[in-house]
Length: 380
Image 1 (cartoon, helix red, strand yellow):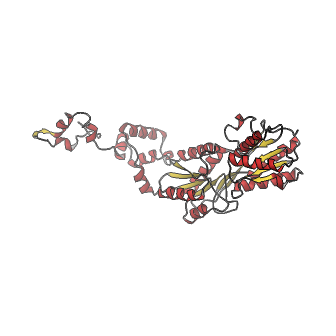
Image 2 (cartoon, one colour):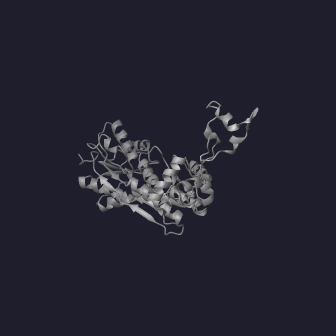
Image 3 (tube, helix red, strand yellow):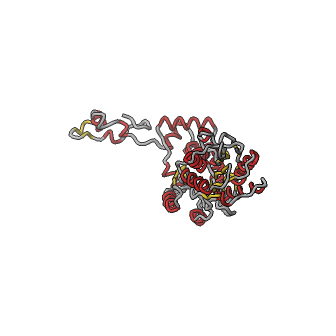
């Protein structure tokens, strides 16, 4: 029997139990496979074994096996090192690497609702950017609960994350204040605090997006346009409501306070509640601008419950263009945001902040576009 390095293991030359003349190695080899396998006497391959097999220094192997430094080695050497590591069964010790570099190569990502279809493409963008730099995302869901967010943050910090992507920001947010105080690299995504600060962000132009829906409806001839606003404690709800009022004014239309209802959360149930409340007011309206697609779905439910049809009786618009809204009946007219690009850019901003803590704060605002489908039409 040979060790993985090609030399006999010292344990094999010890005397066998009950027969000092017989080597222990020969005795072990006679045991049934379930009791003993030659690999049990072998030591784990080391970085030095890989370096020796390729004929390079161990530091070169380390650079190749770290995605963040692989570019420092030629493609041919990287290929040979990777093949040798795979052949020998060598894997980098993540814990040892973390202790040595004081980095875990993990990023925390906190989202408010994992069931919301808008987040998977955002998360894909985050993970693609992180993977290219040798980082892994730990994704946590809060269900929009501030108390749960505090617990989630504690767990992530206990895992020594290198940074945080936060999609749960409120306009006044203790989580953000704590991250700033403890100098945890942080980037906000999709939502902001609504005021300038020390935290970089990657968001959509929410006001401009809602403006596109109002201009579209006004162009179709709608004059009595209602609005289901998002939660005002969130920048998305606040900015889209502000954008609605500004766009109505720009179109020469009066925003009727009686036709504006604020949702307590971004959910289909809240959309149905808000739309039911609007219908109960019995004020004339021909269109509704919902602050996101889930609220718009709730509007569909309320219209159906009242025997009304979209867009024959009331046109509906959403915001986000989340997956499958084009399959609804009727397909939803909505504002398309750059989901994947938002995640990709947020991760890149965070990685830059980790590598260069003193880098200039970046705030990116991505431009939305309007997707016109069957839920909007001329008023009857």
